[in-house]
Figure (cartoon, rainbow, N blue to C red):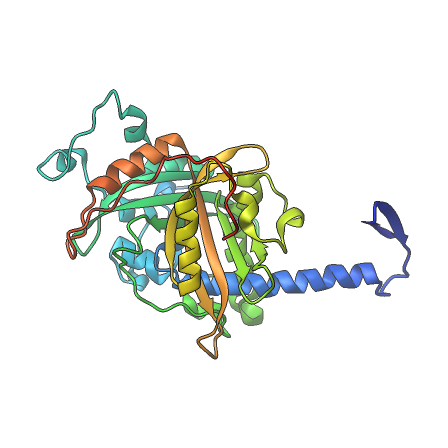
Amino acid sequence: VMGRWRDNKFIRVVAALGVSTPASEEVALKGEMQAHYQRKVLSQLAYCRGEGVALCEAVDEGGGEALPVMLCSDTFAALVGVEGQTVLKGRLEPLLRSLLVQPEEEADGHWSTPNPEAEGEAEGAASDPLAAIRAALQGQPSTTPLHVQCADGRHRCLLLSLSRFIYESKAYIAALLHDMNWPQAPLAARPPKIGGPDLCSLYHHRAPRSWLWFNGRGFEVAMVAALHSLNLMVTLVDMAAADQPLVWLSGGFERVTGFKPAQVLGTNCRFLQAPSTDPLCVERIRSALRREATIRANMYNEGAKDCFWNSLALYPGYRPDSDQLRYYFGVGTPLSTEHMKAVARILVLTEDEATGSVFAPMPFAGWSGQSDCY
């Protein structure tokens, strides 16, 4: 016996074991569609030039906080300045610590020393990644701003998102590095493509053999579990459908916005705009979509209960057999007031040596009035 709501009425569906019903067929079809879209998401994530992903083993003994890396994308390897296969021989905490700009370096010449009283919270937010790793090991997802100097010698602002998840009774840590200086000064230049027959080949990894069975089904399930565990809004939008609807959401979308997937899948994401959303920011996003360009925008969004700052990165995805735009892949990172202060402090001092341009800090300006869709 099964049932579902239709037109405010609960309809009972009775079926013999093994006999399909309209309700069961609908559930199966939705499951197939979500599996299709999640493969698109994982393919796009592999090519993101401003977001680098890694999976680590959450070992319990002997240096567990260092977290041996078992999988990473090309962009993650580029951001930490190490070849992909070499990353797999290292541990997360030493890789990140080797990039950090120390406080005394910030105070030397080009880098200014923040006022401890005015910037106390911000300075605390942009601190040791070890604290974020310890929190993640205890099951607390976190986002930490980092001031780093990458292998090319340029100073950058990275956001480190961490979370713990369980797959096949084993604990892992999902890590995502967001390059806040992208796309003005990208480190990785691999062109995005949606699809591909083998997801496993898009990442550097030393995954268990069981993950690779059945065309990498375990690999896909583990990666999706990692995305769902992060406190991020990972989305996929179908640009070929009417009104450009959301077709896939990570679990973090509901946790951050308060909207359930059933409420928003199939709709345009304009519902996240608040009365105080900056219309200039919305126009920048519209312009990028028209030009099929990548963009990072910092928006004031409205959830089901609260408003929040969202660092939104958008990437176009094309059909694998043509240059026709099909999807837009998005990664939204919610930022607290402390994060905003820390990121703005780093970004306003981050100079692109190639152009001499200074990246502007995130906007705080409000606006009254409802803007159109983007």
